[in-house]
Length: 93
Image 1: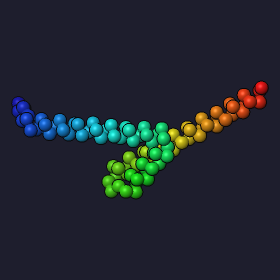
Image 2: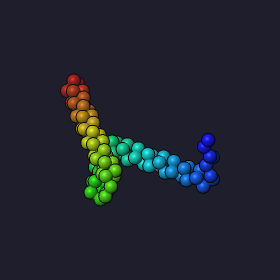
Image 3: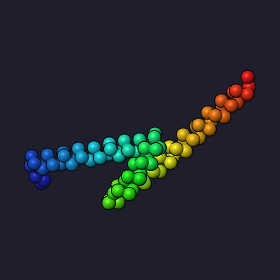
Image 4: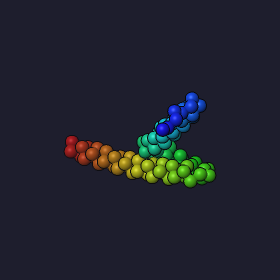
């Protein structure tokens, strides 16, 4: 039969869960920021990959770089599409 957790143990478990949630929210904001603003993502990647000692942070930097490059590709693709549409509409008049 399991013994109920002591009050201090419950506080520690709750604190660790809160830290995990904040860490995941931070990662989510880094990844979304990297995707939506590729320049910011590249800066995040450079800072995390060069200034970090842990492999975990370097992996986060790599993911930020990948998302930034994907976001940059999407921005360039849509920019080309917009230019092509404007040119086609301009020549039709």
